[in-house]
Amino acid sequence: MGNATMAEPGRTTILVVDDDEQHLELTSEILRGAGYGVRAFSDPVQAVESFAGQPCDAVVTDLQMPGLGGIELLRKIKETDTRTPVIIASAFGTVKSAVQAMKDGAFDFLTKPVERDHLVALVKRALEFKNLARENATLRAEVADLRSTGLAPAGSSPVMKELLQKAKAVAGTDATVLLTGESGVGKEILADCIQRHSPRKNGPYIKVNCGALSGTLLESELFGHEKGAFTGATERRSGRFELAHKGTIFLDEIGELTPEAQTRLLRALQQREVQRVGGSTTISLDIRVICATNKDLQAELAAKRFREDLYFRVCVFPLHLPPLRERVADIPALALDLLRTVRTRLGRGPADISQAALDALSAYRWPGNIRELENVLERCSILCAKPALEVDDLPEEIVAGRPAAAGAPASAAAVQTPPPLVSLEDARKQSERERIVAALQECGWNISTTAKMLGISRSTLYVKLDEYGIKQ
Image (cartoon, rainbow, N blue to C red; front, side):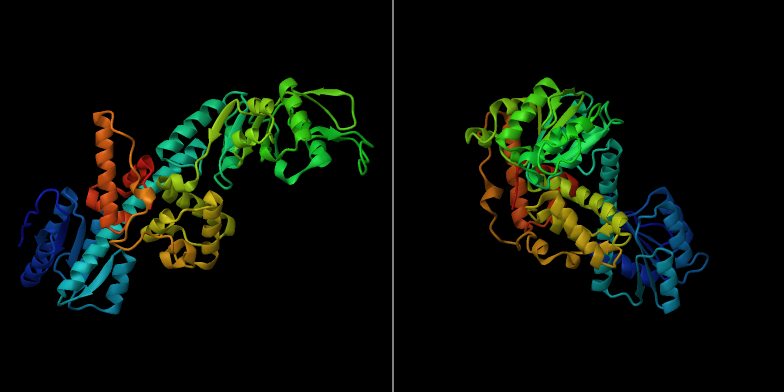
């Protein structure tokens, strides 16, 4: 087989190289029987030239060959495409040869005579590894894109893209922003990003956790106090609003404000001026206000616990951050981004996350949202000494949240009835949604297997799950 046996277009193709015609034919037949296309060469030089002109999905090569040995062929393949996995087989295999092959980037080392099942399993694993590398590269590109906007960690799902577009639009103004969402969804991170992209980015940026203060202490923190205003006030003190003059003040957990503090805050927002506690001098302010809460302020209004006039003052430009369980498509990119942050902070830990571990993280519901995800990754990074985080490195409760076994019934949330049909577009979406749910059930909710069955990438499948509200 001096010339290639041409593979069918569109099929996964394996380049097989062996100067022994009998072994070349045997290896080629095994791979064809497993459903792969094969390009077979007995001349390694011709094989390299063929690969340079048209790369294959994987390479299986002999070690000992005249003119160009397996190690040299491996190096030339890697010069053309570093991601193509190369498996080296030899009847003269030695530990030294195997070590050198692995150092030069070989995926694995086989000893002849090649066993059918072992060869097929190894090629399958090599191709899965290549797909994982490609998907991780895509995820890293998404993370890099998010970082370039200054809005990471955020997400690339449709709902988050829309949210970030709104955040960018309001960042360039002085409009008061109200950020809502559950604890841990990243409200403070988004507030920081809005401030960094605002005209006031070089001015003061003052943060106040309203939930950690109460009564006179809260008013003193917000508005300052005069000497002798209350017991312990031994000197005049400027409040946070004063300190934020010409800059931005971030009021976190605004739903925790007392009625008295709400009244004082309303005056400050309406008139952009404050009076220190115990003082009579009016202090004018030039500030931008960003507020955040994990409470349902509409419910607080109905219960008369939050002033309606204050609500309309702070809710000039509302932005709602959905919980992580409602934007599953963002979890892989978020996890990789957070792992990088954790690794930098700790100075140790894995640099990558395996596909199986990403699937497990994506299947968990994350009641603590991004904060919980970061805590889990930090805990794992402290204990894991491997280059990539694996499923067995994850906490038990995370692994327990992985997709159910094949044949398990889907939850009610996963098979909820879509909206009534009103157009052909709705019909298409309903059909697509039902096909995705059926494929998930058939594949036991395994994301990688389902994506392969549907003929789409995992990233695309995650976006579809988010778009159609499909949950296990």
